[in-house]
Amino acid sequence: MDATTLTDTPPVASLEPVDLIYGLNDKPPLRLSIFVALQHVLAVFVGIVTPPALIARILDLPSADGAFLVSMALLASGLGTILQTKQLGLVGSGLLSIQGTSFVFVAPIVSLAGAIMAEGGSREHALGAVFGVCLVTAFVPLVLGPFIRSASRIITPLVMGIVVTLIGLTLVSVGITSVGGGFEAKHDGTFASAANLGLASLVIAVIVVMSSSRREWLRILSVVTGLAVGYVVAGLAGKVSLAELKALPWFAAPTPFHYGLGFRATALIPFAFLYLMTAIESIGDITATSLLTGEPIAGPLYLSRLRGGVLADGVSSMLAAVLNSFPSTTFAQNNGVIQLTGIGSRHIGLLVGFMLIVLGLFPIVGGVVQAMPAAVLGGATIIMFGTVAVAGVRILATTTLDRRACTVAAVSFGLGLGVTFEPGIGSTLPPLLKDMFASGIATGGMCALLLNSVLPGKRR
Image (tube, rainbow, N blue to C red; front, side):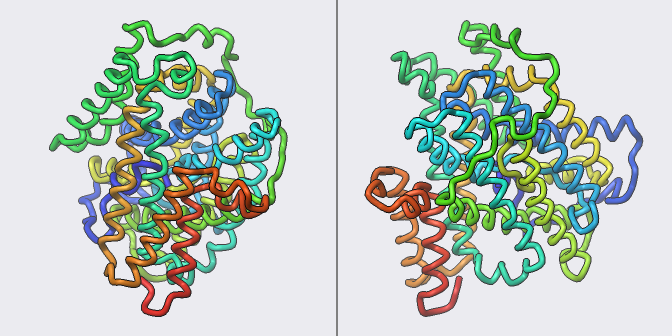
C-alpha cells in the first residue's frame, strides 16, 4: 500500500468506466505509448522512491547506501510491473497495474533495523535481517492468493479502515520530523529553523494548489512538481549538496543480497500481518483498474485477475528482498492516468516497467533523490501520510459504527497509537512479544482483527 493510493483513486463503487481509446489488449503507436508511459512513471515515481529514502534517513545510513536502496526500489518496481502486466503462468493480473514500494512497512522496518543497530549490530546486519524477514513473510500473499474470497470475510472494512488510519497517523510523526529538517537537523541544531519550515511550507503550498485544480493532469503531477520546486529553491539557497554524486558508479549492476541475509523470528508475525493487509488492499486497486479498462469486476476472469495480482505482489516482494529492496504492492495512483488518457493497454505497463528498470540501473537517480533536503521531502510526506489517515476514515465511514464497532476501533487505536507514542511500553516483554508489538500499525491491526473476530455481534 503506497501513501497516495487510497486518495488518488476513489472507492471502486464511485468509479465509472472511461471512454477508452485503446483497450487492454490494444497496441497504441510507439510514440504515443512512450508519452503515456512517461505520465505513469511520473505518477508513481515519488511513491516508489520515498520509502527507501525515508528509511535511509531515519536509520542515518551513508548517502551511498541511501542512493543504492532508491535505485534497487526502482529496479524491483520495474521488474514487478512487467510481471504484473505481462503475466507469467498464474502470476500477474494482466492489467495495466504498477508495482511499487509499500509505505506500510516503513515503521516496522525502521523499528526492526533500529533495534538491531541499538544492540550493536552493523547496518549491514540490520538490513540483512530486514530483507530476510521480508523474503520469508512474502509467502503470505502466495498462500492467500487462492483464498481471496475467504480472506475478505476476515479482513472487513472495519479492520481495513482501522489499519489504514493507523498507517497514516503513525507515520505523521516521521513526516513532521522531516518538515523540521530531519534527524540530522536535530543533531546540528538547525531543527525547525525558518529555512526548513519555509521549504516545507513551499512544497505543501504547491501540492495543495495543484491538487485543487480542475485540470486532472495538474493533480496527477502535484507531488512531483511540489518536490521539484522545493528542490530547486533549496539548491538556490545552497541547501543541496551534490558533491557525493561524483563518488557514485555510473551504472549499478544488481547485487543479490548485497547486505547479506539475516533473520529475526520475532518479527515474522507483524510483517506477515502487514503483507496480509497490503494483499487485501491490492484487491481494491486491481478492481478499480479492471473497471477503468472495461474488464469485468465479477465472474471467473475477475477472480483470476485478483488471484494473479495478489500472487504477483508476493513474487515481486520476494524478488525485491533478493535485490535489496523493500516489500512491493500494487499501486493505484496510475488509475488517474488511465482516466485522463483513455488508454488502458497492458503494453503501456511493459514500457513503464522498462523505464523504471532503466532509472534503477543508474545510481545518479538515487543519488539525486537522496540529496533532497529533508524539509522538502517532509513537505510532501506530511500530506501523503495525512491523506492516508483520511482514506482510512473514509473506509470506516462505509461501515456501521455501532457500539461493537466503536469498541473495536477505540481499543485498536488506543493500543496502536499508544505503542507509537511510547515505544518503551513493551521493553519488559519477552523478545517475541516485544518485537511483535513494536509497530503501532501491527499492534492496532492485530487487535482489530482479533476483537472483530471474537466479540459477539455482526462483523463489520
